[in-house]
Amino acid sequence: MDRLKTALDRLDRAIGRLDQAIAFRLERAALVGDGDGRALSEEEVAEINRALAAALAGERRANETVEAVAGRLDGAIDRLRIVLEE
Image (cartoon, rainbow, N blue to C red; front, side, top):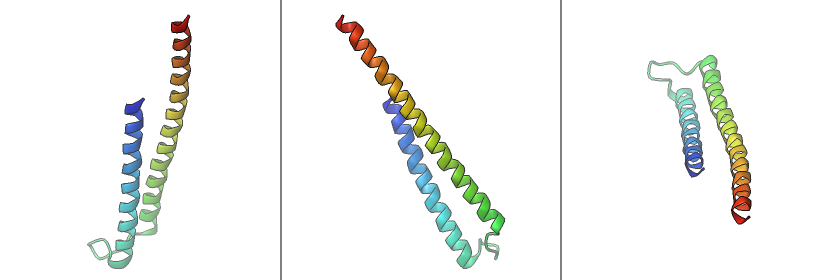
């Protein structure tokens, strides 16, 4: 369980860094272009936003899975305690 929570924490930090990088990239592109003299197109911005939304949705699903697994593990532990006490 701890490994799963650790993995989710790493995922959360990675998504945060991705979000910051995207924001920085969008700001930079709007100010100076992307190195070849052009700013990001609306399509490129939309693609970046879709990728971020997909990453956030994946994180939500992972968190929901952790909660479900944690509930099942807690139930199994409780049942084991009852069996051991008998």
